[in-house]
Image 1 (cartoon, one colour):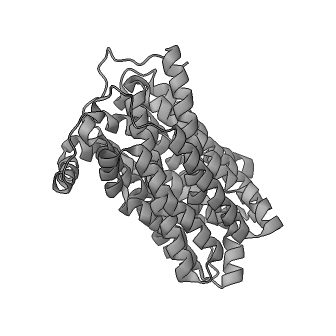
Image 2 (cartoon, rainbow, N blue to C red; image 1 turned 135 degrees about the horizontal axis):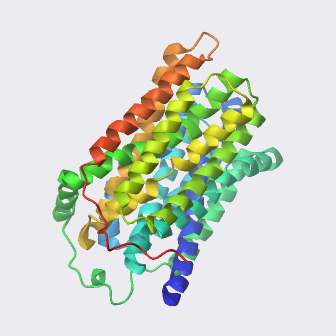
Image 3 (cartoon, one colour; image 1 turned 90 degrees about the vertical axis):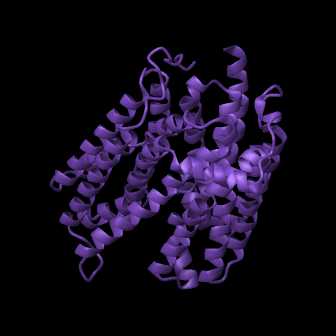
Length: 418
């Protein structure tokens, strides 16, 4: 246990440093959006495209990332592709119009695409499978510092030096994280089976992806992975701010503070569920309990009248905490993939995460937009319908997931994390 603890500390710290950069880019334009719109003359629609370019790139490149991880290893894949993020951040800093900003943001998404999936492959090969969810939660949670840096600190720095210089600094920091990661990261222990396996042809590699997609167990897990993070990001990452403005009339600063604590709650939820996965004997029961709590909170959000700001803030923060159980799903998914398809399996499963963000955020726009008045605000009924729809979608996904096989046997209770 002591040897694993020392190894885990080294691996988790290194991977988290690289993941901080990825998470910063994911959330970085929200706080600087007004500055960008004023300087370049962007419309709301163009801003939406710029923001979405990161997630589209991320989703498109998950399957290629999986092939690269299995063929070339996480070290070369992560550090090599992150160079695109370095160049994309520099390109964003000098972009002069909508197309240049979109292209730069897409390039950043390509660069960040392998970071988390490569981290999961490394964890799978170096550390115990029983504590996979816990170690994953540490990377996700510590990497969440990037999301935090993209809020108030970025706003302060933007006021001091401008948003373009912020992205020059981000480009430099990303470059340093690549150097650090390349020096520390190793794909697997010296005696690991991955060192002696035969390299697959491109045809066989693509065939492996198709085989993964056809697997029933993969499909059941994919269904719920499609809605977990998507539900959180639909509210925390986009429509929660509009809800607080339209229904409660909160100003930018107050909304930002509430969203900040919701982000902290998401990070805390990842740690919480990562720990519980090592305590619960059955992973499916943990996922079902988390999903039911999330559904119940969405129903409450859709049912309550206008209440005190502290009450609705507390409810949204609790929802953000208990709805962040994606690490358990990734742990379940990791258990169904053989070693030779591990990178492709995890990366293909992760496609659901970003596809879900796109679909559920778009669903919110369709529903809320249907109720919106001429001045752009929407009534309480619009958000009620949205919350109820999210609850229904999670319910359907949970029913599909319930058909999957349990990934733990009753005797495989993981040791409690140190």
